[in-house]
Image 1 (cartoon, rainbow, N blue to C red):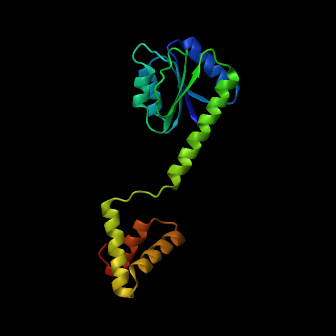
Image 2: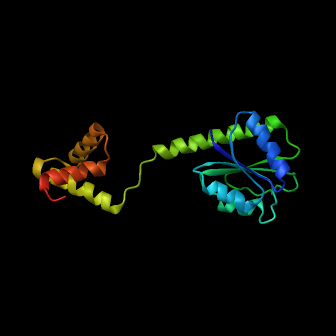
Image 3: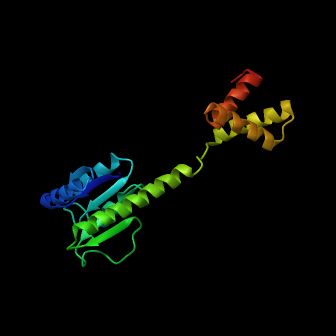
Amino acid sequence: MSNLIVAFPKQEIAQNIKKILSQSGYSVQAVCTTGAQALASVNNLESGILICGCRFVDMMYTEIHDYLPPEFQMLLIASPASIQEREIHNLVSLALPMKVHELLQTIEMMEGALQRNRKRARQMPKQRSNQDKQIIQEAKELLMQRNGFSEEEAHRYIQKRSMDNGTGLVEVAQMILSLMTGDR
């Protein structure tokens, strides 16, 4: 389940929404009455959904949205007149008056999107630093030179050892360099 933060300028509204969510099995991480509090709460979490109103004493929802980390989505609950017509990435809005089931269905939909994004991010290959790339390349060159491997064979060899040992490619490359040259 995603981290939920509720932020409304009126404490009473925020507490009512928290109560609805809690009764429906959701865990609310924080209840805030200013934009600064909301952003501070968001920055303490990895990802989640910020459920908020339109206008706070210190900022508008658009400013809060601009400072949200990419792992967070915003659910804006406001009057139809307050919801701006422009398209904003990761912003979902519900017009007042809203129904409880609309709120719960919208949060469920947003949670699904967050889970898909997390899964997609886990499946993306990690970006290696230039130093890591250099270590892998040196190990491949050493395997090619000493064992007569092609570059593809050397890479597959390192990859297989990595999977067999449950370690990363860089660690395996470092072990190969260490064992074959004795200087790492």
